[in-house]
Image 1 (cartoon, rainbow, N blue to C red):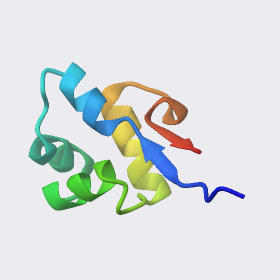
Image 2 (tube, rainbow, N blue to C red; image 1 turned 120 degrees about the vertical axis):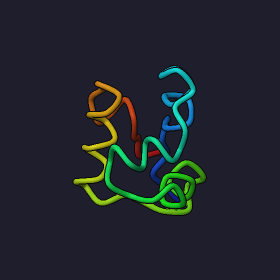
Image 3 (cartoon, rainbow, N blue to C red; image 1 turned 180 degrees about the vertical axis):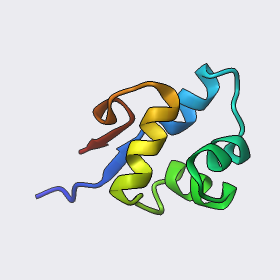
Length: 69
């Protein structure tokens, strides 16, 4: 059985949002740039609140930003 993990589209969404920086996204969500970098790299899973805040910044439903796969 393959191990499942949380994947995300944060990097692509930042690019499509006018090349938003990790710093700017972190500021808008209330986390550090390093946290955003770790999320994008799949090294860290966000809290549910953080995940919803990130989705809200991009105006997307949660399942268009994060997926379990």
